[in-house]
Length: 302
Image (tube, rainbow, N blue to C red):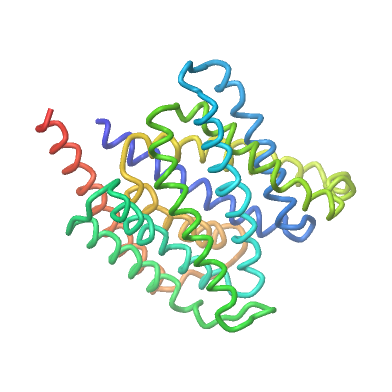
């Protein structure tokens, strides 16, 4: 039952962040990407703040506070900056495909520092999910961004994927000492603080006042649901499973975005997308199997 809850939670997390991609695509016409990230983490951080006070922990030392602040600056400050910057120079499909390498870097970092072992099932899961996403996006991989610069966007997105892998690897150890209800709001508000100078320089106050009620509503959803709730689930799962298992489900993000694009933006879904999604889910099934095997071995050891 615990394995099922963990799987459902991480799937929900990445489906929610997939909805965020579609909403960001809409809001980027009225707000700068950095401003969107700033407001998302501002709303999300404050929405999760009651959990911080409701489930206060005595384990929060100065050292842990510094670690949470560092992780927040990395994942909620530097990561969204690189993510937004990368899409200036590459297409959404190619950027999403490069971002899907995150579990590979997570696995390699985890192996290098001894946090987790690499097994055959995990390797099969990574290969299948990456292959599936490649097939699903194959009809879009040759499309270029308006400001296409050869490999620049892909390299920036690769760096973003590595930042996400570093967060997943090192946040897991912090989350074993401090609950997700504490880490999530503090990390998000730290990232928000890092993004604030860029947002102020862009004139965010003027831009926010020009938003329509519907745009403000979408911004609140982006922050509270696709921000605070989604990343709370991410942190909760990181405490229950391996970092590689958690990041593997990032492939659900672009898949969700494409499905929503079909439903609401009249985008076309080709046969290759359906085939690719089936391969991705086959890979995720291997990931769930690997996670269950790890839990069983842990229980036997006890």
